[in-house]
Image 1: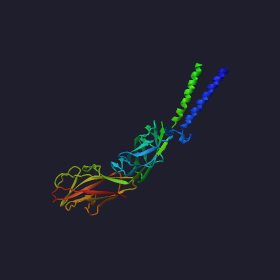
Image 2: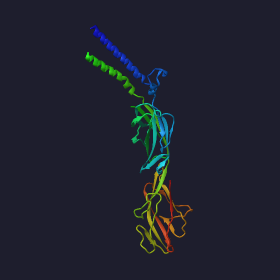
Image 3: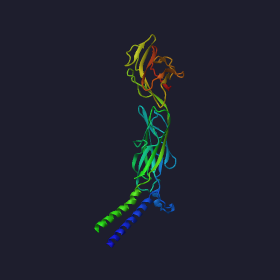
Image 4: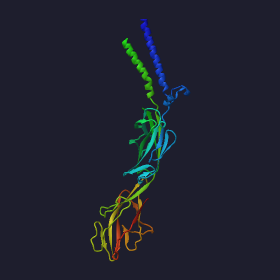
Length: 188
Length: 179
């Protein structure tokens, strides 16, 4: 009987021991809660804790993208009008009866160039502000202020090309157009 | 004893899974792309064949050709060409349409002018009721209240003296200006 009790105690102790190790390991993989000094973390562990940077890039024959550092960019479509034809500043214009569509390509990269980070991320896009008179699409997905998936298996460190389309009504007054698109990368 | 071993194995595997599940909960990153453009106001003019007029070559564009065909004082005029005979000349006429579209402009209507481009001291050129001036004189005003988005019919009149014996060719330049 004593032997049986001792054996159970041993088992429970072992379980708690393993649970402690597991929790510790799990916490160590979360950047917000780890308390280990940075110098004590091996390089490979440190890389896993880094937030994924998002870099916006210009594509050949596309409108210029000016990078404002990590995670921010400005895509300049230049001067546009309904009766422009062909490519204008890297943007193609197609007119319909009441609207015209401006389309151009842009690229983005998750993480550093040729990142060794394994796996992929799901890419979502959304509008940072309401655009009541225009329709904004990325890769055919009509954006709203709710994030919508535009890519499901986007690898890290690889440049991916995307197509931006903005549908502008002819009734919209002339002037400056400014749309802000948020992009979100969630590791798979 | 065997059951306990299985239970232990299951617990152990489950515990080993915990860290891997926790590490799967990755950190979401976000970025923003500002898109800028300057939308310019614009209007466009195009010539369109009128159902009652001669067929325009280049109909639907802003550069069209209107060919009256072969006309004479005594002959039958071509299809959709009207001919009136005067004392010293005869006049041929045909309707054609002009369509002016606007985009991103708060203009209620447009003004339209026309002007013959090459000097012609023999023949007379008129659109609707307005004799056309010849470059470099100021263009002739055809309307100051043109309606956007519709095919507006105009009629070109060409008055040819009986003394004229050659081919007639000229260019009329139309300018629409948003009001």
